[in-house]
Length: 380
Image 1 (cartoon, rainbow, N blue to C red):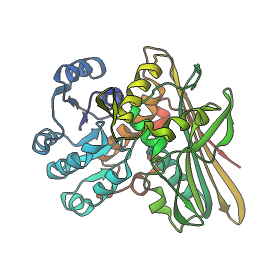
Image 2 (image 1 turned 180 degrees about the vertical axis):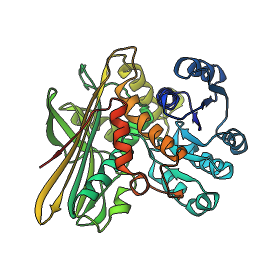
Image 3 (image 1 turned 45 degrees about the vertical axis):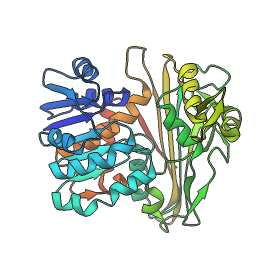
C-alpha cells in the first residue's frame, strides 16, 4: 500500500515516521510548500521508498494529481485546507484522515459524505489526540457498557520540568492553543448539547508519579462526540490538563483582548493583538525540554444491572531530546494508524464519517500498544 503525508511540520514528521514503519506500506511520501524541507524530512524520517516534493495544498488540482498515486493521505497542514484536500481525495479515490482542530471545518467535510461514498473512500476528520484518539476510547467504553451515564475526557500536553510562571511550553501551534482557550466549548448535559465558556469549571486531579494538576474547559476536544451521542448518554465533557494555577494566570491575558483579531493602533502602526500574543508565546514558551502527554477518559454507567466505571489512562513521556516528542507521538500516530487501517482494508464503511462510528477499537488499540503508547484500562 502507499500512504502520503501532507505537511512536513512536527506532526507530519511523526506521521511519516509511523507509516514508513507500518506493516505492508511499500511506498510513503511527504509533500510540503517548502520543497527543501520536504526533502530533508523524507531523508530523516522516511526510507529508500519515500518520495517527496513541493505542494501548495490550496491548489485542489495539484493535490489531486499527487493523491492519484496513493491509497491514503494524512493531512498534517493547517485545518483550513482540509476541505480542499477532502475534495481532492474524493476525486482521486484516496482515503483520507486529518488532524482537524476546528468544528466548522469538520462539519463542512462531513457534508461531503455522499460524494465520498460514491467514490468508495473513507474520509475521517479530527484524528489526532484530542480531538482524535479519545473519541475511539470513548466508543470502546460505550460499547462495553449496557447503558452509559457519563463520559469525562481529560487530556494535557505538559513539560516534564515545568518553568514558571505559566509552567507550560509550546507543544503545538500557538494559534491552536489560543483557539482552545478562546472558542466556545460544546458538552452534553442532561443528554443535550450545551455551550460553556472556555477556561472555566476548574477541577483538581492527579496522576501517579506526577502529582497535583488542574483541568478546565477548552474547545475542540469533544469534536463530533456531542452530535454522535446526543440523547444516548446524560453527560459528556472535555477538559485540558495543566499544572496548578495556569488557568488563572493565562485567562486574564485573553480577557483584556490579547486574543482579538481586531487591529489597534500602536505608535502609528496597526497591530493585531492575537498575532502579537502568538509571537510572544512562540518566543518565550518554545523549549526543547522534554514533554509528556496525559490522557484520562472515564466512562461510567451500568453493566448487567450493576454500576461500572471504565478508566482509560495514558502517561506518555518523551524519552530524550533526540526522540519524537510525546505530543508528536500521541497526535500523529493515531492519525497514521487510522490511515493505515483504511488503506489496509480494516475500515469497511465509506463516506465522510466521525472516527467513533467507523474505527474498530479492537483493531486500533493494539496498534497504540505496538507503538509503545502505554494505554492502561481499569474497570471498577
